[in-house]
Figure 1: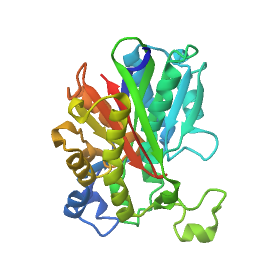
Figure 2: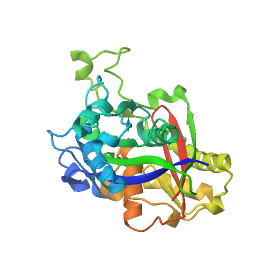
Figure 3: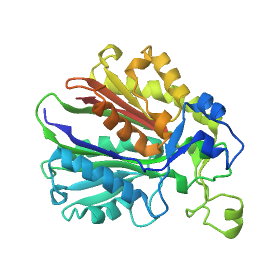
Length: 326
């Protein structure tokens, strides 16, 4: 059976490191509080002259290099982001121009922290189509620009970064075995930017209220995530005919170490089977999973033949998982 294999991986995080201690200059918080609540010690912040598409381009170049292809070899670009360069046009199209991928179509996927999960599922389906040879799937975010730096309930948790992969056909045992996606729009206001769309166009009054920034109901997110995480893992395994005992590594969305720990406990799996790097980068939303996946491979935590689950959960509400034979 023809599948889509991850032929090349790439990632990029900005150079500037912002520690928990640095945040005490902006809001009333502490390193101890942030670490105990989330497991985050630091995050990367993009300079003002870098956009989401710039981070995406750097990760994409590395992925293309590993896949041994040129920009003109790309047939399709799928970019998962909830912090686009501009509302219009798509950031994927801006990325296409920056890469000079002259033969590629391009579109964005907006599924917030599970954006990569959705993008990989869609990209894997395109990659097995006879009309597509190389599909570039990217998750990229610059959350430092959409956060209210005076709101300590959100601003200390997030960071900037990008991850990418090149998908192409394979007829061996490796590749994307399947996906499992869910959504519940009844919880759309749990994670949102209230103003800026047609429902609530930006006005001076709304900006004074901070409605143009990211808002999150932390308690509701916790209640949702500790259920969605294990549900998605079980869902994709069942769909593809595998059990929890077959899993070698889980790459979860890097939202909160306590969510990950609770999710793994509910799955009955040891934490050694979950790769985490949020202590270094914080929550990078749609970029967290591809960056973590790339680092897990580079560190030798994922080897050939391993059964890997990538799982995301977040705004939408949306959640899901991919199953990959490495």
